[in-house]
Image 1 (cartoon, rainbow, N blue to C red):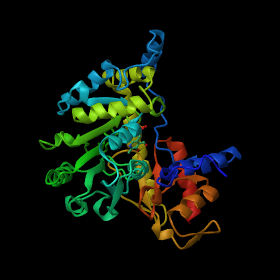
Image 2 (cartoon, rainbow, N blue to C red):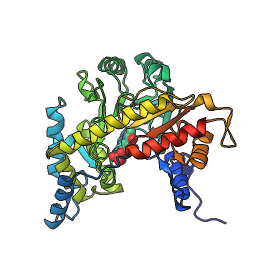
Image 3 (tube, rainbow, N blue to C red):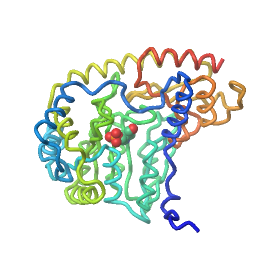
Image 4 (cartoon, protein in one colour):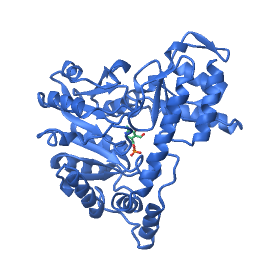
Length: 396
Ligand SMILES: Cc1ncc(COP(=O)(O)O)c(C=O)c1O
């Protein structure tokens, strides 16, 4: 008889589908196949040198010990100043630095939700949201936001989703997986609808530095008076500064919430890596030239990707206004036999594309919407070009 039977909680979450896709791609690579990998949500650039140097200096200066669980005063103060200068008056006590934005989201949900609560999530949504909500015992309420409305939630959809049990709305602009960015007017309409209720907000702004054309990102809690009292703002260095491996994210929230988030973190993981915190401080306070260079590369890749999608038979895509993903509508291929395999949903489409064309994409079903495949263009133009050549043949 098994002694270590799994807790009930184990039924609440599924392994991340993006990781499953990554594992399948890795297996093929292990067999010597040259896989064109567009599954990963991370910049291919190296962390800028000034940031690396700051980490090396921190180590040499002996910054290799525990820090306060909520982060070093230097980094928290810098973040408070950073948000204050952008229109969100922030005290250090409101800032909790964590092991990546993902942990900040977990801390935030642990702090304010539990059994009986509902959390409204516009779908498509980032893979981890629903499972992180379930882990707290709360219920994710997924609201379908179709392509026809740019994958964005309208104020009316929010109003319709609210029940007496609604505790939070989770928003993410720019969005993973769709690249959609709410306009100021759309955000304000949503903000007004939120203010009519007693619902709080988690605003995941991790892609805030990556917008294209006229699109702009906004700090949600600055849009209307009163929002800052009910909003937990999340961001981090992973995407903007090519620092995914350093694991630094943060949250800005009302003080009592921040205090409890810090307490949760102090029991679960203690402080985020001391060296990474010094690196993140340099990222925020140091020269920003490398960011502009990386963004220029994303602008170029995005344009190329959109051009190539136009020539892919039966595939369309709402141009992403932010982040580094193209969310391609591939549903016209469902019911077809591709590479000898009957494809009837986004999972079979992506698995077959991987096996037959050696192109790794992520199925829309992982993001709560069927009919799509997400391509990350956080990779070099040459690989992107070869990927499209292979997809063209595969779909012909
Ligand atoms: C929307 C969104 N939020 C949060 C994260 C987590 O970022 P971090 O690396 O800071 O944990 C990701 C990473 O893919 C993301 O896409």
